[in-house]
Length: 402
Image (tube, rainbow, N blue to C red; front, side, top):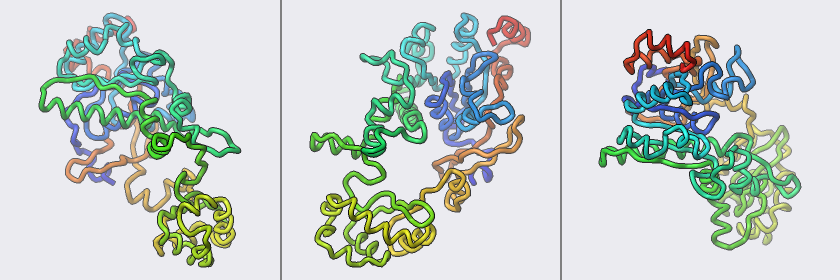
């Protein structure tokens, strides 16, 4: 994998300094992306307790696995920015930074003296990314923004699940993750703009915006027809047969996007007559008779296993794939081929594994250079770089500033 082949790779963002005062998932996921691509990410954490995610179970030698998965390639510095001396240290650090990322509720940074205007005044070239649940302004801006709440309010849960199940949340905090990706894209866009203008700017995004943007085809259905999309379940809302089907030993996703694919599917499962029936003559008819068609297809599919049908259908050009459990995912040959299981060594945890980097650059690949940091692991090194003496550092520790 790239992480193994190029352990010292600098990455395309090498030389950029990111100060991360975010917590939980959205902000840290964003800054991990930047760190993977070579940026120096300095993670500011409260003294003693650190990021709230550190103790989230399951624990591995006392360190939360949730924290571990989203905080690689970062340098942990403990700093109480709610105290004047701690805030002054942060401001000195920001003068050396290219990016600042925060995801507090709107108004918190202002009360600390870190408004958008004051940060840009402190460092006119900085890109200040502000992530929130509902946006920096507006009638809901002060509401706490948690992923499941936003999955519901962004419309995602209304189209996930079935009529019988009712709304269903995504099995992962998809709003947090998507918004972290959007935030990273916004930061990179602002950095590119800075190459021309020589000036920094404010980047804002929110979980609500991320989820609404992700509605895509479901938003398109409503905006084009005025009709509210119903729960989609495991079927494509406008194509059939396209969804989840039972087989002998589990489930298989099959995506029949064209009439030609439907003919191939019908033939391969031993039911060529399906393609000749008037009620399945085209996609519109197949959507209209979706439930009946699904029963006829599954009657044939239950005679074979996931692996048998996966091989046979893909061979004839019918897209399909099994529903893998997480343990099966990380033993899947294609996942391993794509280097999506990374080996990392941690000073406390020892050798362990993390999901790999999901995009690759041919000339300047990303890399996992730093294991998820211990709390305050880089505090003294960064303080020294900023010009503070050892005596200063001792005093700051004694006062609880560090």
